[in-house]
Amino acid sequence: MKRFLCILLTAVLSGALFAQAPTDSLRRAMLTEKVDDYVDAIANYPLAEQEAECDFLIGSCKDSLDRQLVAVRLYDRYLGAKWMGAENVAVHILDEWFFSGKVEMYNELDYYNAFAFAEFNRSSLIGAPAPQLTLKNLLGESITVCPGGGTGRYTVLYFYSPGCATCRLTTPQVSAVLAQRRADVAFYAVNTDGDREAWSAYLENNDPFRRLAVHAWDPEIASDYQRLYGVTQTPQLLLVDPGGIIIGRRLDATALETLLSNELDLYEGEVWDDAEALIETVMATGGTVGEVHSMIRRRTEDNPRTYKILTAALFHYAMTHRGHDLRFGADTLARQEILGHPDIWWTENDRLSVYSPASLSVSLMDLAPVGARIPKLKVQGTLLRRGDRAKTGVFRLRRLCGKDHRIVFYSPTCEHCRELLAALDAFRAAHPGTRILLVDMDGFMAQDPAAAEAVLQALDLSTLPMIFRTGRRGRVKDKYLDNL
Image (spheres, rainbow, N blue to C red):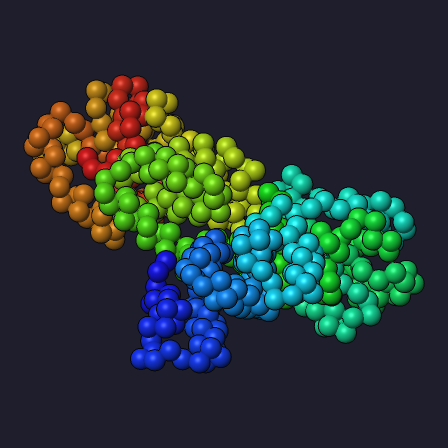
């Protein structure tokens, strides 16, 4: 945490930057400037780190007046900062240094204003559980707003006033953002005015907004929503995750769209690219799909978003890379961790990008499963028998009876298929008793499209070459083999 700016600040505090002691006003001006530079430098750090940096900086001041100046300046900077989460740090500074009595405010009025700020922000800080509200609808009926609330959806809370000029600009922008997220987001619009007729007219004139949101108000402020959600002015826009935790506050429509994209569109963009690169690196070490997923689960138990991204990336890796173990690992992942937990993969993007592919993967795996008899199919191919003997014609797959067979579906245009065919002679020399049926799917499709289509419906030939190992009575002993 002790970065270069901190060193400069410590130097200013000790007077080490001056050959002679500077005037008090000059020294304080320099210290204020360095504090401002420091806040700007750490503005993009995680909130917990920003809080720790401020604690370190204030605590490093040996002189009580310097400590007061630094603490007040840090609080003022975060109080007026525009970036999301600045209120968290401001309230932390108040709790840790001023309300605890370690540092004094300049006067009682400053202390009172700081206390009021903390009271009107503490309940709705980033990372805090969203308070439940009991409000009323336009008809006067009671409405309970319980963000998260077990619905599995994100919640947007929009506090506005029909008479607010900024709200009239913001409302259609927010509506446009949420119109694209209707399946994933519960939208509550809370009118902060007390004029029922004006509210009704406003909704009639803003039809998309009227249809998208659950509309409520509390003209008597019995719910204490102003304090609970820090509604000191309108518009006030907050985003709550499915667990009921506030993840966005004092948003505008653009920031809301960005947050929702980051939360819901998990399988595209830079974060997804990073996740795929990480899985590539981890899998290159030789771990199995199950081992890697166990590691993901352990390391993301407190971060469901990261768990989803990394699990989806692992499933994608296992499905798009060749290998018997990968394919069976993907099947276990699909059944147990994806299809087995629909409550996790609930967003529209989850369904399209992860849940549906997992469902398709399982359906394909269930075609001609290991242990079952291979379907009654006729194929055109070439049967390689002991020695140089070979027979070309139509074969019934179930009648390939014997101790050990390989059925190889391939395409002459496939590079991996050509590599496999090139290794045939060596394999046959090492395993003279194994019979191999080669099925050229390109030629088969051209000569007998109906029979070829029947094979595609009954067997998973989504990637070629596809190698089945069969035994007596045509039972599937193994499939998705990497080689003969």
